[in-house]
Amino acid sequence: MQLGPRPVALGLLLLCAAAAGAGDAEELHYPQGEHRADYDREALLGGQEEVDEYVKLTPEEQHRRLKSIIKKIDLDSDGFLTESELSSWIQMSFKHYAMQEAKQQFVEYDKNSDGSVSWDEYNIQMYDRVIDFDENTALDDAEEESFRQLHLKDKKRFEKANQDSSPGLNLEEFIAFEHPEEVDYMTEFVIQEALEEHDKNGDGFVSLEEFLGDYRRDPRIYQTFFWIHVIFLYMNVYLWFWFFLHEAANEDPEWILVEKDRFLNDYDKDSDGRLDPQELLSWVVPNNQGIAQEEALHLIDEMDLNSDRKLSEAEILENQDLFLTSEATDYGRQLHDEYFYHDEL
Image (cartoon, rainbow, N blue to C red; front, side, top):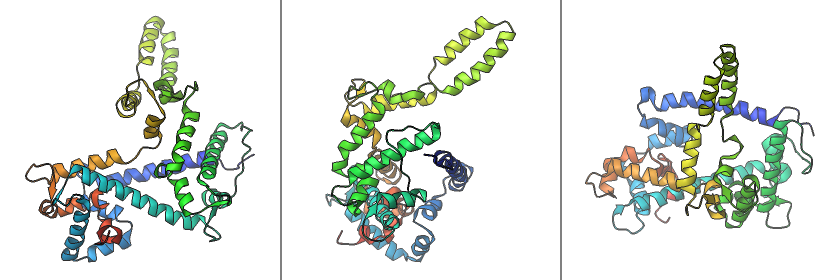
C-alpha cells in the first residue's frame, strides 16, 4: 500500500514546528531567565474565555472558592495540607482533566453521532481517510513501515478496548483506548505490547540492554569520527587517531547515562538488573505521581512560613498567587470548575 504523503515525515515536520513555537513560548514564560507567574494563568487556564472569567472574579469570590478547594485537599480535616494530601489532589486533578479531554475527543471522533466511535471514524479523524494495512506484509520504505507498525498497534489497542460485540467504542471503551493506564482491564495488554517490542530474547523480562534499545550508541559519534579518520590517515597519524576513536566510541553519551540511572533507580525496584512485568508497567505507562510529589514539595518549600512541613489555610491565602499558578489548582483553572470548588464534591 502506497500512502502518498508520508505520515511519519509529516509528523516530524509538525514536531519541528511545535519545537520552534515552544522556543518562543519559553522566552515568554521565562524572559531573561526570570519566571513570569501570570504567563501560567494566560497559557493554562484553558483559553482566553477562562482568563477573562478569572479576571472578573472578585477577591472575595476567589477566596471563597480557594477555601473550598483547600478544605477538599485536607483529607483528614486537621486544618493542614501535607505533602501526601497535596500530591494526591494533584494526581486526581490530572486524571480528571485527562478524562474530560477524552470525553471531548469522543464527540469529535463520533462522526455520525450514534454514541459510538468506529475504527473508520477514528482513522478519518486522525488521518482524514480510512487506512488499512496488511498485517503480514512489510513495506519497503522505512518511514512507511514505521507508520504501519504504529497504526497496527493502535488497531490492536482499539480492539482490546472494545469489550462488547459492537463494531465501535462507547465512551468508557474510548477512554480505555485513549488512557489504558487508567483502566484495569487494559493493564495486561499494555504489558504484553511492551514485552513484544522490547523483550528481544523472549525471557519475559527487559534487560538494561533491551531497555536502551537499538540506539545505545549515538550514531552521530561514528559519522563525525569517520570523516576525522579520513583526514588523519592522510596526515600519517593513524595509530594515534585509532586510539582516540576507540576511547571516544566507548564512552556513553550523556543521555545514555541518564537512561541508565532511570533504569537502575526508578524502574528496577528489586535491583535484579531487569524489569519484570510490573516494573515494566511503571516505565511504559508512567503515572503522574513523581510530578505531583515534586510540585507538592515545591509548594511546601515556598509557602511553609513556620517550617512545620505542612500548609495551613492562612499560609496558602498569604501566598495565594503562588498557589493559583501551581498544579495544585491546575494554574487557577479549578476556581472555574465546579467539580473542584463545589461544596458537595
